[in-house]
Image (cartoon, rainbow, N blue to C red; front, side, top):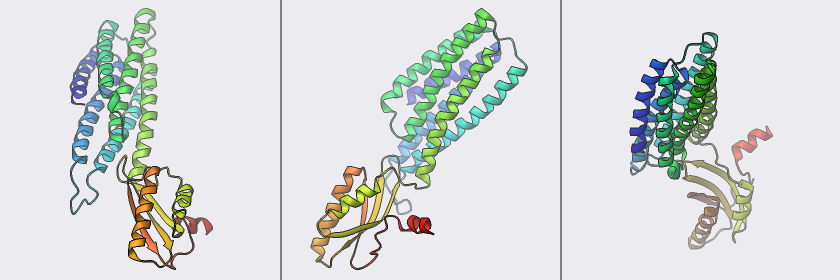
Length: 287
């Protein structure tokens, strides 16, 4: 990741200078994207370090959501950049400018090679919202560099100046659509939306445990990218504490196959017999 930062700083400087000297909006838009890549990579690296810190009395779940916050910031930043590029592209369609391809093409090719190296460096590590958002930055830049090179060749040999803002639009729409996916998932985590779990299957699994009469009051949420928490109520007969503990242990063991990493089980006797999976949701739907 740090090696990718160095590469992206070099690309950004080269493309800013090249974009200004050549008059290419596509090349300049690529430089802005590379600048956001640099910020994204630094922020992602920082978030990874912070996320490994131990829990404290104030942050009892630790700092794992630092990575989610960075993913949210990165994706929101890219959506804003995409909107800016769309506006600039339409302005260029109305007032096209002469592009100096003898400057644009060499710089674009250098950017393409450097972006490709960055993508290869991060490819095997593109897991989790944080690193994946940074990886998407780099992948988008690589694709945009390809488009800039192709656009430069078309402008040089066919003098079709409108290709430059067209390439910019394609880059902007690609970046925006991919960033929206990361943004939406980041918001889901921060809003404690339930992860994709088959609650009906979980209910069947828990109620198959000997001694469990009913499983209900399910709540599931994510602390970070991979840490899924789950809580539920299990209705049981009156029994010794040692037997109750075996039921709790069995429930935790069975829930692991659903990708749940942390379980809180509340055993009940003659209480909450309604059996609602998610009481608040089901009461609202009935109303």
